[in-house]
Length: 125
Image 1 (cartoon, rainbow, N blue to C red):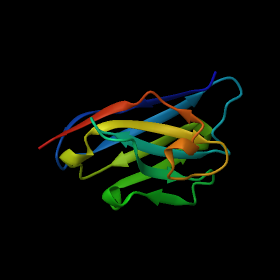
Image 2: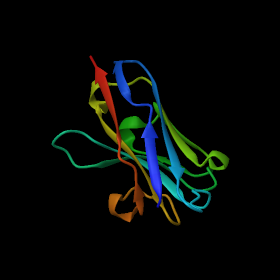
Image 3: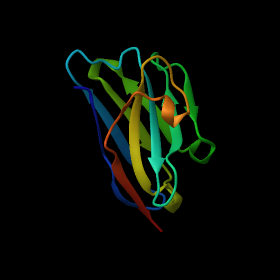
Image 4: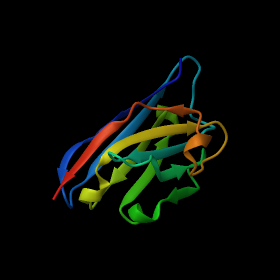
């Protein structure tokens, strides 16, 4: 069974930083050739794209609200993807999810094949 497990969420003051991790596990499951994405969902809102990274780590994509503040990265040997979040704002408050796509890294929620359970990020003003 494939599992994606997010960690690193929490409560932080505006201007602070958090680093989210997404660890993949499962029998013979590897993210090595998979596109990986981070998404978030605030209460009463739809799940939205945050960042994505292709399997090589050479192609990155960010949503406009997080450009210049968030950095996505991956360590294929550790089967883990990261999201470094700096200069956090109250509007970044949401549950953050990581997701895996079998072949590429895209912005579309419905395109992803595997999802984690989410980790809560709360930014106080």
